[in-house]
Image (cartoon, rainbow, N blue to C red; front, side, top):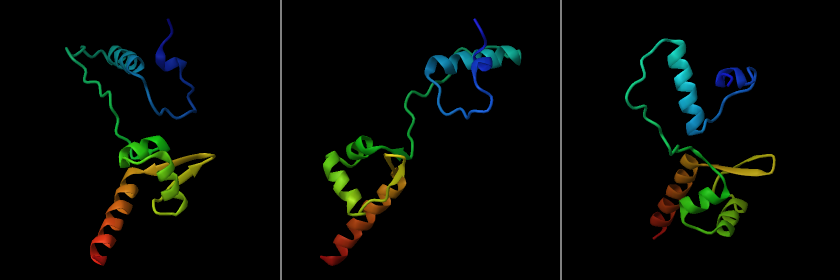
Length: 108
């Protein structure tokens, strides 16, 4: 069985590893550096990213995807497109929602 590190393309960025790949990489690094294996290696199974796609953002805001598309089309929430894929930044969505709530509160 070949080394995990040797199977990677050297000129391509590394974005994400699954748990098995992470454990294999840690074992190889520890062996290469002659480090004793700790009893427990913490593994983070949930990664909170600032980027959300349409379905993630709709769930985050507790609205339907069609409602989120309406917000997007009306420019109520900032978004980014990469090709045909739409992304939202969680921090910018929060800021837009907070700003809208402040506007509604001030007009009452």
